[in-house]
Image (cartoon, rainbow, N blue to C red):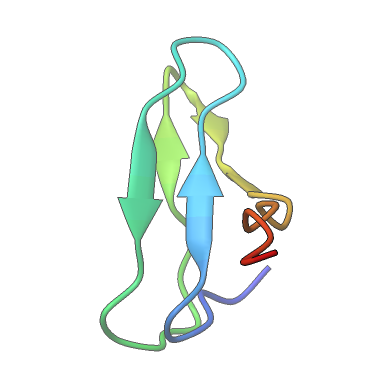
Length: 47
């Protein structure tokens, strides 16, 4: 999986989070496995 600019990645084992500041065809690895794309965060309502 290519690294996408501006996306957040997270290690499922230790919880380390990374923000991609440059797109690349390589992989992000942590704890000997590829890091997964982090899901969308909920933004609190302004109501």
